[in-house]
Structures are given as C-alpha cells and as structure tokens.
Image 1 (cartoon, helix red, strand yellow):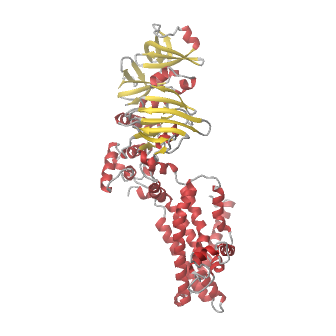
Image 2: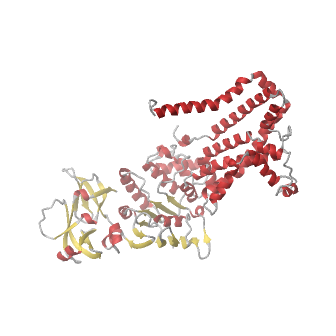
Length: 269
Length: 355
C-alpha cells in the first residue's frame, strides 16, 4: 500500500490508534504497580486463594470442554444432517449472551428451583455457592469459543484424507487420531486459548450462579472486584489484575507454542 | 471366481447410476467417460466409501456388500487400495510415514519396507520430505507406493494422471503401464481420457450418465462405437512400434506387424502411437496423392459402422486402426469389408508415448 495515498495514510493512523488504545490500559496497570506491591498483593491470603481457585476451576473447565467438545466438533463438522444449522447457532448463543443473563439462565436450569434442580440435588451435587458451580459457569461461557474454532478446524479438513486412511485399514478412531487431530491441531489450540482466556476473565455468570465466597467460588476476577469495592483496596485490585494478566498471557502463549502450526514437521531438516 | 464383481444401482445428483462390472485377478479395467458420468461413484462403491441403494460387491467370493442380505464390510476391512485423484497424501506425515501408514509391525521394520517401496518408485531420496515439498509426479509415486504398501486385494485408481503437467504425465503413463501389468490383483482405473484407458487397461467400459454404454477392447470400441457418444469419446487409436530418430529430425516408428510412421515427437525404443480418428483420411488404394501427409499406411477395411451422419471405418494396417468419413464419401469410395485403402495423416498429428 502506498503511504502517499490518502487511504494508505488513514489505514496507518487507524492501526496506530487501535494498537495504542488496546495496549495502553495493560501498560498502565504495570506502570501503576511497583514490583514490591505485586509481591505484597500475592502475600494476601485472599488473593492467593483467588488465583489458585481460578487456575483450578479453569483447568477443570478446559479439560471438560476439550474432552467433550473435540468429538462433538468433529461430528458437527463432518456430518450433514437436518437441523445442523440450528444446532450450530444454538451452541454459539452463549457467545452473545450477556454474562449476567448466562448466570440467571444457569440458575433457571440447574439452581435449586431450576428445571433440573431436583435432578442435580438427587445426584448428590451442589452447585450454587460451590466450586463445582464455578466450573459449570466457566464451561457454559467458554465452550462456544472452543467449539467454533474446532468445528472450523475439522471442517477445513479434506475428507479425502480420512477416506484415504480408511482404505489403508484405519478404523474411524485411528483416522480421527492420526489424520484429523494432527491436521486440526493449530485450530484446536487457538480455540483452547480463546476459551481459556474467556474462562479466566469470567465474572458475571459465576457471580450470579455460584456467588463470591472467598476460597470457594471467589475467582480472581471476583476478588479484584471485591478489593476494588473495599475502601482503599484499589492498589490491591491493581496488583491482582497485573498478576492475572501475567498468568493469562503466559497460558495463552504456552498453548500457542505447544499447539502451534508445525506444517514443516515432515519437511527435510 | 477370484475377481472383483460389482453391481450397483443408486441415484446420483442428476441421473441414476446403474452399472455391473467384473474384473478378474490380474486384469485391468478402465472405466472411461466424461466428467460427471458417475465413474468416481463406482470406484467409491467398490471401496466402501459410498453405499448404493441396491447393490452387491464381492472379491474372490468374499462378499463386501450385499444390500439384499444386509452384509457390509467397512472400508478398512476390505483392503482395497485407492489412489485418489489429488493423491490425498497425509500433509503432516513424511513420504515414508505416508507409505508405512497401512503397514503393520514394529516401526523399524515398517520404515525399512517403506524405504524399499520408495526405492522401487525411485523416490527413496525423498523419504523424509513432506508432501508439500514434492512435485506432482513425486506425489503420484508416493501415493502408488502407499496404496501398494498395504498389500491390497484390489487397486482402484481415480484419474491417476490428471493432476500432472503434460511432461510428467507422459513419463507417469509409461511407469504406470509397466507397474499395472505386473500386478496380480484386479485393477479398476477411472479416467476421462480414452487414450489413457486404451494404454493402461486391457478392457474398457465406456460410461455415460451412470450407465455403461459399451465395453470391450480399445480397438474394438474405437472401430465399432455403439453410439455417436462413444464415437466422439473413443478417440485416439493406439498402435505399437519401435521408434528411432531419423536424420531429418523426425522420429520413425516401425510398427509391430509392418508399416512405418513418422512423428514430430522425440522418442526411441518401444512406443505407443496415438492418433485421433478424425485426423486420419482415407484414400482409394493405388492412386498417387499430392497432399502433405507423411504417414500413409495401406490396409484392408475390416468393418464399416454408421454413427449418426458419419461412418466409422476400421482398417487393418495390419494393426487395427479406425478413422471417420462422411456417409457420402464412404459411398463414393465403395467402402466395405475387404476394400483396400490408404490411411493417411500428418506427422504432427502423431503422438508418441514411450513404453
């Protein structure tokens, strides 16, 4: 693009503005927090508990999302059936649902007076004000991010490759594991990164469905809000935010590195 | 009965597929027809990748599919190897891992066997290369090696040469010819090019809109097409001979059984000569002609078959050759079985395929 053209210049200015606007708040957090304050904030038991809870619940939620979402996405990507478009739209609904609405919806479904409340109780499960409830909320809001990417990744797979595997004696599972998975891996990793990021930042649905009990359901974002609401708690909120940024950034980068595109794998060294 | 037997009836997008075919062990059948005729569907039914509404597929007495009794062997249980049109090599696996995919046994042994096969296809040096870095011809060889590595009981090839550029296509055609003649299993080849079918397969079944409209040997189909569709489709007469370079820069081909041809294509040794019937003109025997056609073979008319407003004439030169004339000129020349004629065409219309 030639910069001398008016449009070229406009595009450069827009890019600069967008990047600056998106980076500035992140930089500001670290500019406002001194390393000693960061360490102090981590010394607080409530902060440590919140971070640990966030890590634990998001990890469990991601395990559920990947374990159930991967075969489901594979089926949705490869099979053509009546009502497929409807199913695809339905599973994306939580993406556009305000988090508070998601919390209410979860209560209506699985809460004590929800339509499946009796069944949940009958199974000996307690969700509301429990860590398990946090996991349910995280799975609900983050699964669509993974599913979307996974469906797209499997959908881009050449069906001939799976057929070729089967003519060579591979059953459906071996074809999935040895041909579909390696080819779709970068897409699955990108979906996992998005879903994990969404889960780490989850606030509204967790608050409404599971509450904000320190050590039980108070995840890092809830702890940040709780510090922020407390008189004189802004610095602690800032410090916890900085830690959360570091944790999520390293998780996302880690996933990208592990699952990244290694198309050159089979190429000569 | 150890061959591949297939009978299937199933609706396709625009017409119904209704075919029956038998391929004996070691026999090569080419299913030839225009794009969209249903060729690939037949191949997919044989491999178990498409289930016909009604049909039966069996190999060597073992039933793979019988919609009547509900028997169905899954693709992975058939050991029926397929070379796909675009080769469908696994993009994340190196060449040798592609070849070893269908093999059983410990890794070291599989690698050795894969390398041996790649060696046989003259691409052993590329064993560790990924499919993306291979040329079309190299991919085709890896795909063939992969298909044969699984020790298949039947081999199906879907337009095996169409992904190649014309130069590598000619080489690949030669190699495929010698490979396929060695195989001791039924081979089904799907192609839209009649000359490919004529060269690679012993039997040809011409398919149009889901039905086999004529089957037999290439020369027979070309000489006596059952319809004007087959006449148009079954071009390219294929003759065999020995090529040598001539001092004038052309190539001289001594045909098996007698006769000599000239071509502008360069080649030496054993060759297949292909020429389209509409390039060949017929002239009465014993009359001097002043046209520019370098190739003149005299022979005897075998058969005269009317196809629409044209006439297909089969001539023994002595190899079988077919040509087309209008009904009027057939009449004027008094063409009938036994008539002596001269078949003439240009050196530029004579394609050579080294064998």
